[in-house]
Length: 308
Image (cartoon, rainbow, N blue to C red; front, top):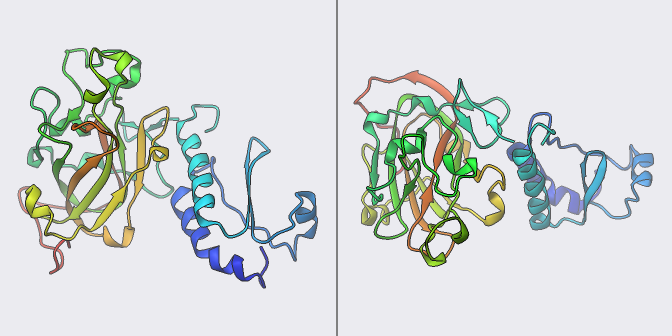
């Protein structure tokens, strides 16, 4: 980039946002080179247009983007970040959580896994298949059994350790917390099995969630019709590229300023990515900071607007 480059200035905020969201400690690092001050570097890498974005892995250039193409830049960086999340000890895999809690993605710098603050006694889940896991399944500390390579995954006790929707693809989950939280991101793990792994038709295989509405500081679970009239704190659309190939986990970065002083979340899975009428979720992790402990059974009202 250069200080005088107008396209560089235009895409600069987008680059900074990607840096804040997708940096991975000791794995994915963002840097900027001013070509007026570092002409030798620009010549070494054949930079002939500004801005130019170069992505390196293991000291090799793996992608070059010339010009202020925000979509292409986002896709390239998300791809390398996903590789960083899914590779194992080789440097780019699964992260260990607090204690023995399994995580499907690395923790962002400065934040911790605060899933232990979920008040499991207050959980409420609508439209779940009662023959499979319930609301507490989402927050089990263990690695999902489906990731162990078993064709008919379940725990040692034979219990199905995942959740599927029942009458259609929608799920509604109320999550109260034992403390006031600042929530940075969510990690959602979902690994539907392929038809060759199970005795069922492709159309019956549950989908991964695609559209998720997130609501903060509700006193109770929302009804499905009620949710249509309540503005969501954030609406999320997941793409196939957002899921780690190894851990089947998507890290969802939230608008941090809107998730301060959070005493509860409602997650509304609106639809899934596919043609089935079922959605599957294996695990959910809450990433952020812990504030003041709360008296269980009481939800404080934060703000006066719906969703606050």
